[in-house]
Image 1 (spheres, rainbow, N blue to C red):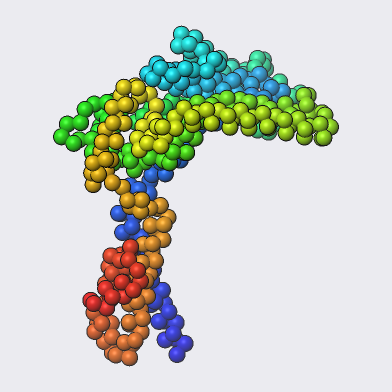
Image 2: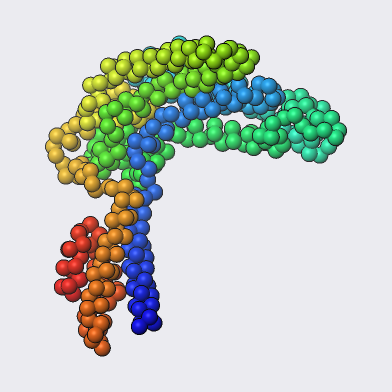
Length: 416
């Protein structure tokens, strides 16, 4: 009896494993394109907050490395300039294309060009310093001269430099800074953003033409309109994205700078805890009031557009005002006509995890139904063949009834 029970359990486990495996394979084949896509709101927030996050991290790195070595401080300045140039370029492009006013902290286009050239010169200086000091001096041992790097420890003593700033940290930081600057340039492009949103290659030409303001010929913009409606966040998230794009860099500078001044022993960190807490509350209240008032002013400025159905178009940078107006009219007209191609069911693109679980449990339900039927016919010598519903049939029923209920699955299996 024990042998028969173990054999039956083994058979049931093999059947369930087969059902789960086939259901997972079918699900991956049908939803591979959607599984590789991030939620649209996350993509817009990441692209809009990239300059501010870069400036935040670069400011922290610069302040921390001031007491380590000049090379690390200059590397932090380089990363800080990378975030600033990306943020300033976005606002200058918006000012040129849409006639928006830019903050006073942003220079003009001519000074911006000089700043970009100085940025490239700083990168060349850092690379040259690495070659002379690290490669020729420390690694090959040709000399012991130090220009921008940390001083060498005396013979027989350990270096006083923190572990995260010892060799080969400088070359790793240098490569990371260059890659980060490249990523900031890529996330600025509309094509990269559209691809991150999940657009197919065949959809890119239509989306490019639509965002450029090209007129629709023969309904060729229908697929682009469907895609834009599908990736449109809520009105509040759209306003958050615009807020991050406009004021994210300011927060990336003032917040870490305030924390450094409050905690460093050379500044306000030497004060008593009661005084320090009071100052921290005042600074936090000031930053919070500035952020909330700026967000309220921005919402008052774009409230009419954020409550409209075409609000997603304001999340795509580098669009002319006339082009955006024409695209907005096209979206409004398509939505009012009630075109079936532009209607999106909120449950038509579920999360990958939810759909995967649904598919797995649908296959398992079909397998369990088949196992129960087989157990009821176990007394018959040809129970499996007589039932006519083997493992593959149960798998097919479970995969076909992914979105149905378990009762529906039982009816399908019983009908075979």
